[in-house]
Image (cartoon, rainbow, N blue to C red; front, side, top):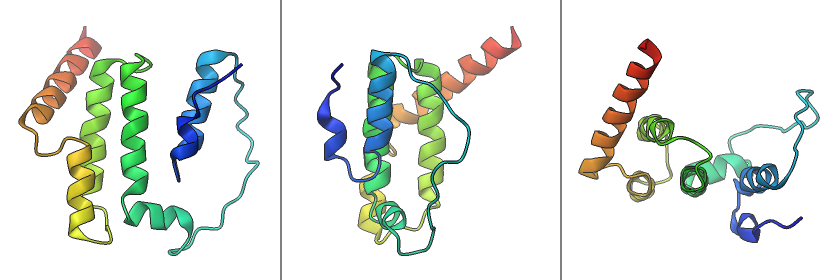
Amino acid sequence: MTVDHNFEKMHGSGDWLFWIEMAEKGNVGFDSRAMNYFRQHGNNTTQKLYRNGTDMIEDHAIWLYLRDHRLIYRGKAWELQKYRIMWQMGYEFDSEEIRRKVLRTWGYGHPLTWLRVFLACAFTSMAYRI
């Protein structure tokens, strides 16, 4: 069984892409037991990847993979994009330049982004009411 090795180019989100691709290839189990423990502090690798925008840019690549491989339906994809943009707007990045880069990556500021998000949410909520 082989997977694409794009996950190796990522610094923080590669494990997500790896397991998504593994799940596409075969059976993957889920075990809810805590088997890993991470010490969280303001200067660990995860926090650095958040502040320099790497985490959110890599998450966008994973979002595109899920959307383009039809592993998530379009309405949900746009809904997730909306929430991700809103979350990023309040996050503390190392610089305003990084914030703008991350938001551009996720489509913030593009006029069709909000229209797509609005339509996705509208149709999703209509589907729940039917």
